[in-house]
Length: 415
Ligand code: DSN
Image (cartoon, protein in one colour):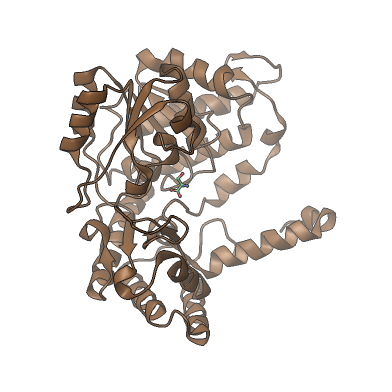
């Protein structure tokens, strides 16, 4: 493995090998991460990376597209068929560019846009102040109900009626519950807004039938391709036919140059994999594992935002256990369990050391872990919080985690 890289650049080769080992030996709980298959890895590292192909299949600004066009067409057709979409663009470099393309297609600077607040679980590109989407547009933000920590749909509707945004965005990066896409659709229709859903976190669950689909309801659905969908790092836009022309123009030449063809190839392969019965089973298992893990964590005294989960993700407020997000996430990492610290709704603490951690089950489910492993994991998470300063105990847990991981091969990582 890596024979040429080792010769040309042993330093980078060593880091790649160490990262491979790290991904093998740890339980990876960051809910936006996963393991791609060997087939996706293979295509991502091919000569497709050498080719420029600005434009779209059949209408390029460079010659030599005999093999690139069919690859992009396959990716588009597979995306349409998997999600039941009328049209698809597979060129966005990732989720943020996909979202920006939608702004560029439908809004002009200063226009009012409306999305979920970042500190309630939304995304930077849903109109948060430090993002270009908050700086160049006029963002209005909805959020969660202070008691239930579920989306406050009534307040969202009131805000939409008052501010009449041009673009209404549903979707989240840290929301553990099913989003009612129909309510947003009704509001968008009432106020005449373009309705966009960012389904980046749940795309794989939607593909596998483990989460309701926003595709029939929304004008536009954006997604990354690398989270629950288990493809390479990339983005996609699904849309109604009537919006195809505007989105195509917004992605290229509006926002991007040439598509990354090695990624398009990886997306095509991942979409083929996501159309299988195995993937459907995987998507359901992700949700089932998250539910089991949430139950076990609750029993051990952890406080979960909204009380549990309906999807792949769990948000834990750790302040009632006498700690905060950052030191707990760090201790977990030393114990071989990787997650990210995260604000919780109405968090009084700063984002660099917030009250919570965010965890999820997409990656561990790709390794075949199930109910017994969720109980074991909750037990380790409990031991870590009780022994946060005890490096020897954290080291012992890391060794136990590594032993468990050895029994669950990770896709794309040779045994
Ligand atoms: N950074 C991604 C996540 O971790 O949820 C969202 O873009």
